[in-house]
Length: 406
Image 1 (cartoon, rainbow, N blue to C red):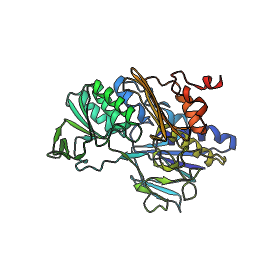
Image 2: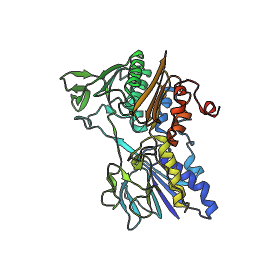
Image 3: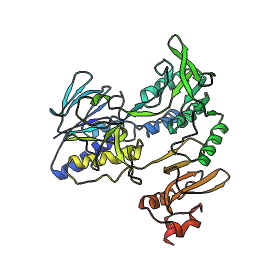
């Protein structure tokens, strides 16, 4: 049984690990080949900031740098898939190598999506890969960079701005709407903005960047729609991400923004599954289908695919919207919908608690500072529990499952 995994992120690696754990029970001993565009062992993108700040590799290579050897994986690094032939069950790599498969997992992740003129100039960086991030941090540590402008204030943009400030740069963060507008309500967004400015980061909201501009092929800053030029030694594009699926053209695998999959994470072609940042899955709460590009979803999807490849009848329960900021100075957790019928909010000092309700059911929550109760809120949200009877207790800082049991 030949298993081919395209991508070495959490979806791909969790799939490989699950295959090795369960295959002997099925009396199957698959040959596993994993292809990665990066010249590194499989790593954790969310851990890159800690890696650069502390120098530690422990969280970055969360399964160990020798994971491919331990799992008996034929690991092909520094190369990408060029095309897929689903009739012949074969993948061609960019170096001309042909790899046959009995089961294929497409987990190639996402790439920067920056629809801004000049995004291809030298000096425009992104933090979607360890290679790109290493190149920028090396310049910082060699003293070549003192100022940075970050375009886009989603989770990635905010995390990058915090990292660069912590590395000693003067940072300007530009966003055309509000801070993390797809994940945060207005009150929480204001809280995060205040925290960013308290760290010395200049935040410019309601500002559209029309282009990265410079001379001799190198970006020297950005031009806004107001005609203002914001100069910087380096520019960071954090305007969004897009699934890496261009190589699937002509494969017969149906694609939209990502790859639509069913509840088994199978594509429209036999013996082909998709997981992680490329997979269009159903939201566990709303049923809406789109790419849910966060680590826990990718890891869970990888495990489901492994079990399906081995013949288990596992069903994927659906993806969740949930994220957190680690380097803001105060912890933040955001989950679920950003709006509903009603918001319950309580703030004290450096903490803010927002519960979003619809038909007396929690459809989202935002916790800043004091994040106790996140597990309880999530459980109630996913179960669709009517919380009318506990309404007065929902904002209590000690709210939790133990309190509910009482």
